[in-house]
Length: 445
Ligand SMILES: NC(=O)c1ccc[n+]([C@@H]2O[C@H](COP(=O)([O-])OP(=O)(O)OC[C@H]3O[C@@H](n4cnc5c(N)ncnc54)[C@H](O)[C@@H]3O)[C@@H](O)[C@H]2O)c1
Image (cartoon, rainbow, N blue to C red):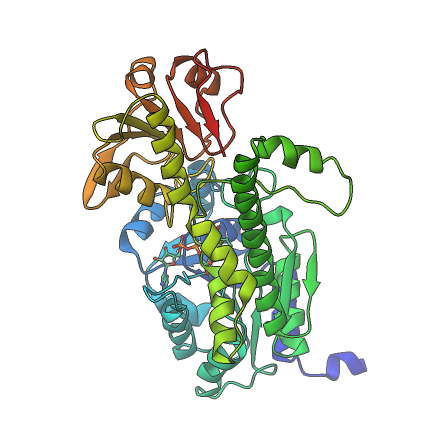
């Protein structure tokens, strides 16, 4: 017998072999925009995956192969269900049978704009309550720096786990961009930071089976901060583009023309564009996780709060543009027909979380405008307790509108037709051709 064979297998070597053989059983907690594509990617790679979620409707739909996210086709989900590689369940008992558990639950803000990590805590408690020696636990939800070490680790230690020996714990931020066909889960490198080097090795090995590159960092806190820095960077640069659009308006030049010219520089510049305001689960929310944490230490994160102020003022600016454009035609908001194109927070998806369309449509309605909307991804949209139903942006609808307001530049819209048919267009996404409107009335950010 060789010396190697005499060494008893550790929990790390056992799990690492199961990962390499794709024999490890996985549970992904949270089957939303992040968790479902991740579960499908692992299942496609040959792992047996359980998608655990507390939402019974979501589980019922997934269990019959109906996907609710743009990055997962229902046919591929159905094929994985039939092959026994994926199961959707609301039963937390699957956790005890899992070799690895990845947590992808929401991390929203409270009304006070403080982080709400109650979902992470609830999910982690479920996992810790069923802790079995040899498991790998990874948190992917965006969160404030320190969560993995200060909040999750004690939950497992209380249950007798020895981190790095019989329980492996790491943070690896999700970076998915829902609806982006160029960069899917399998195309985006993962950042991984474990509590110990064994934790990092195992988490890196697991992701290494589905992504092109794993970038290892020294601690979970570095990985947590890397995600926050990515989104602060985006938030601040969007705010800069938004403020720049206000300045260009004063100066009488096209913001887009200036940014596109600057973007020809092949180094040191990355273009960001103005919009009607930020939305979704990440950009308006994540930076405030960091500023909240810093405030606990008496430090005010100035860039974050300035960017937040500028971005949150954009819906108001769009309302001013609509009011001014109508005014020039001798019209008041009251009684005018406004057709909003796109109520999702961004192009190509049906996600309306934190969408600026809420504030814009609610204010237009309060001021007496008759608002309808078209959005191929959002069949109904509730504003101030009233449920609006999407209309088709037909020739008749466009011609009947006093103002067409583009908030999300979905690829399904025919922008040449919109330009041709509409009397007045306020285009917050630069999607309508400049010379396509015979009336010459197109207002852009
Ligand atoms: N959506 C994005 O574009 C994106 C991108 C990168 C990172 N993130 C981050 O990923 C995390 C998840 O975001 P998401 O967009 O997938 O959210 P989501 O709301 O689409 O999905 C979360 C799911 O978790 C479920 N859930 C909540 N508590 C649970 C529990 N205790 N047990 C089991 N299931 C539970 C919910 O029912 C829901 O289905 C967040 O921290 C978010 O900031 C999101």
